[in-house]
Length: 328
Image 1: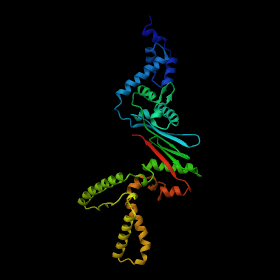
Image 2 (image 1 turned 90 degrees about the vertical axis):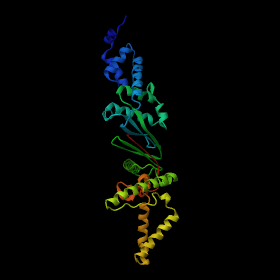
Image 3 (image 1 turned 90 degrees about the horizontal axis):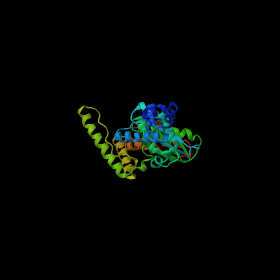
Image 4 (image 1 turned 135 degrees about the horizontal axis):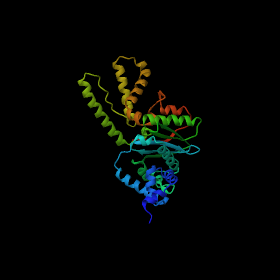
């Protein structure tokens, strides 16, 4: 009869190391799995997987807010993927084996259009989803793909900010210096967090609700500012270019002209004053666009122009899409 003791004696260091290299599990976990499996590698791997399932079930409600944000491009920069391999602690995130796992996942993800297809993809003799479960058992923390985005375009550029934020930007044509342009735009998205390309993408109900909410916040702030004797904030009428109809702009111009008349400004110089005031009116009443619309944001490398103007300097090219993933 073979005893556990005799099996333990039969398990060699090289066998333990082989299983460790294959699964990433710790030395003792690998040794114990081999002992339980009577030295059978396939059974030992299954033992480690079952351990991962148990750990995953126990940690399912944990927050996985640390990890690695990573991008991967194809050879001709016409497709790219950005994903987040998330874990619970920074201690795990900075581990070299965790970083390697993220790179392996990104290589596979590049071939799939969405997260569900990626999770069902092969990873050796298991799926990506099963590998995540296995590694949860190995590491002892919740491991998941918390972000997955893919972009295809005539040219796709990328930027990763400190392994915390990853961005893809697709251009509709391969212009000269496309790499520079797309990287600058990806840096813009990473830094300023645009959620859409243009104000034209906004739903009317969203803009109306956001307007109401912002006005309520400013009015509340003004109560406290008034109590302190400080200058009150301007309460905007509008927050998006989508609200600035021809009628609204016509009234704004008439109001400006009326103000100039009341101030005694000669009518012959109005043409020099009105355009600047109209520009200020638009700026004051499009704060939502400036915060969330990539094309309407001030360019981070030159705040004298917006992103749309910067793109225009490269000729006949436009942003076809962009995607952003981040930890947390």
